Image 1 (cartoon, helix red, strand yellow):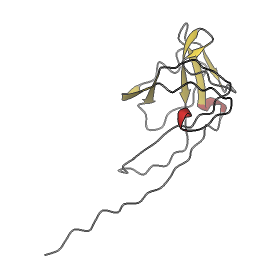
Image 2 (image 1 turned 90 degrees about the horizontal axis):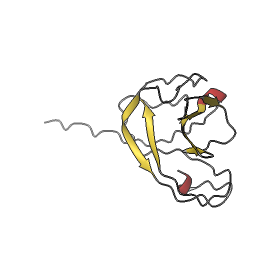
Image 3 (image 1 turned 60 degrees about the vertical axis):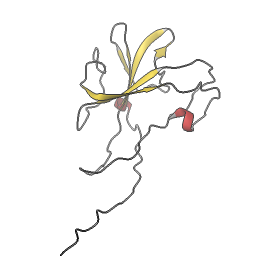
Image 4 (image 1 turned 135 degrees about the horizontal axis):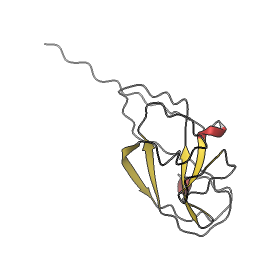
Length: 135
């Protein structure tokens, strides 16, 4: 009698960066206008206006059939703030997301995955913080 081979358990880390101006965008929810390549992304609100932020990572080579055990986006605080945040993280339902453009409702008009994760990070109280609280 033959025993089936044990499945291979290989662990690897993939690092991807937002590398081009069309790989990050902010869309105002009052009117749908989109800005690209900002030096600082305001999550949730820009001033008093609600907005959606989009990030595109490419290329991210994840072999088909791989089991992803964990993933995160590491952000950096660009100023001191004690303001609370209540956000939702969603993905685009696309194998190869297109670069963002300045068209109206460019982010909110894209197909989203059914999965969504609420995220309420603690206040980012120190400029340039980049740790677990900014993930």
